[in-house]
Image (cartoon, rainbow, N blue to C red; front, side):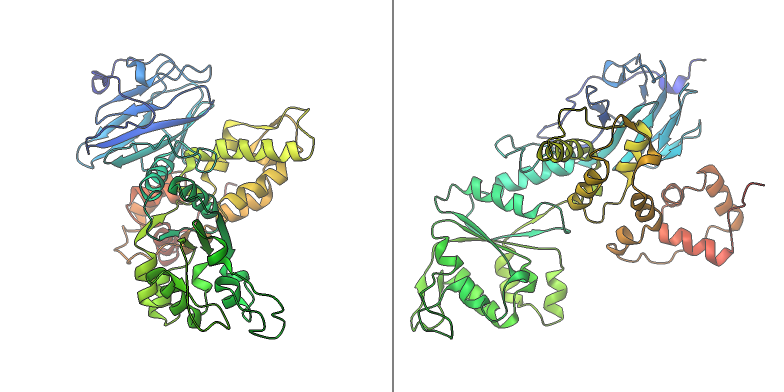
Length: 453
């Protein structure tokens, strides 16, 4: 291959895993997720050749399916972002499932790259990436930037006595996060978790704050309630958005005055607990709708931690999948035979799946493939994965509808579609718009993909 002048002068070595630097410069890296023995590659605003033998030691991918000079990641000064192009590799390169050619393709945070049989996730951000080694990796696993930021937030919030509000989609691990916050708090009392959506509407007040004997029909004995049973510890209120409006002032009192009023008692009782609340709903929207008190929200969100969705931490998916698979097989005494593995293409499909149910969806995949043997091709993944991926509606529904922008014109749109092999996500990135906008343009311009004869 002829020498390319743009590929000279590779970058100097840099810390590969977290780039835990105190400066606030932007950073970028490739997190190699398969094969697992390969490491992360730090990237700078300069050219970086990716290959089995790289001019810069930081960018070598010593794998039999990777060419000596496989692909190059370059910095586009005008766009302020990295691009990637193939260098005539023997086994090909893919970006988010679409083939990479000699034409530069822009990279975005969370992009999935497949070079031969090496799979990696591109991450980019700004500011220091400082991990918190004291936070349990069992409860908060992962090496993605999202996992690192989550551990740092937990480390900061743990010792603080203020309430914490955990925000995140269903299945993002909010209860595990609450457990780690409690462990970091150094409070001697227990952690008691209660799901506000599962409480009996008739008994919810006594379940939270306790009751006296004879306070109501069936109250044959005195009950302390969760807030007093957790004395000196932590109360975790999951699905806080489901708490009835009439009980919200009483929770506010527990937070502000540190006292509760048991049912049937004339005087309040002091309590010493820390409150962690969690929801997958927009409490601001609930406030505007009159279903949640503004003053209670203000008190609960003194510390707010947002838990990333699985699709926002793609680099963690292989390790999470392996851990769930190991546990599943151990519970079923299936650990005597080798666990199934995934081809690079199958793993790529798993990484690109939207995972609307997050860890619960990953657990569903484990149940589907747990008893399989050998190496699984993409075609052996469960059918529901391709159905959810093709619809795209679940992931997009969580995002605000983008403003309509001017269509690029039929010919320009067709050119973009052909250049990206009709990968709508890639076309959207190329045109700097949302996937739904591309679909609207296709409908408005009556453009359909021609079927091969």
